[in-house]
Length: 216
Image 1 (cartoon, one colour):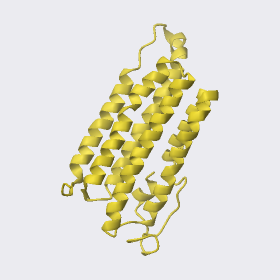
Image 2: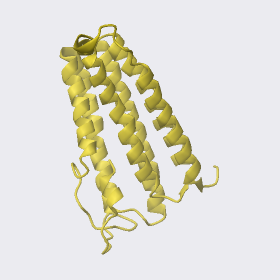
Image 3: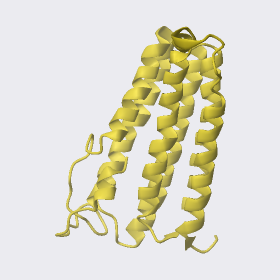
Image 4: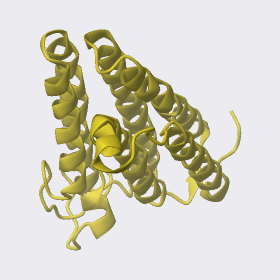
C-alpha cells in the first residue's frame, strides 16, 4: 500500500479532469442554421439538457473541493475511489450527446440515468474513504454522517428515473433536475449538528464547519 500523500496532487488532477469534461460538453453545441428566434426555438431542448448536464460536474467540483479539504493526506482507498468517481463522471459528455442525438428517446435517457447512478455511487465511495480516514484520525463529525445519509437521496432519485424513462423520458430528466436543485440548496436533507470526534455518540462543544454542512 502506498504511503499517504498530500491532497494537492489529487485536487489538481481532479480539477483538470472535471474542466475537460465541461469543455467536451460545450463543444457538442452547434450553431443552428436558421436565423433569429426561428433558429433558437428548436435547440432549446438541447440547451436545457446541456444546462442539466453542466450542473453535475459543477456541483461535484464544489463538493469534491469541500470533501477533500477535510483531510491533509490521502491514502490508497481515497486515490482509487477518486479515480472510480472521475471515470464515471467522464462518461457524462458521451451519454449527454447520446440523449441529444436520439432526441430524448427512452433508451438514451435510461443510459443517461444509469451513468448518473454510477457517478453518484463513485462519489459516495470517495466520501466513505475520506470518512474512514477522518475516523482513524478522530476527526469525524456528526455533519459527516448527515452528509453521507443525504448522499443516498440523489442515488435513489437517479435510480427512480430509470423506470420512469420507459414511460415518459422528460419526467425522468425532471427527477435528475430535482437532484441538482437539492444539491444547490445546502440545508436540504441535512441538519445542523454538534461536532463529534471518533464516533456518532461522542460530542464536542463546537459547531461543525460550514463547508461540512454544505457537502452533499
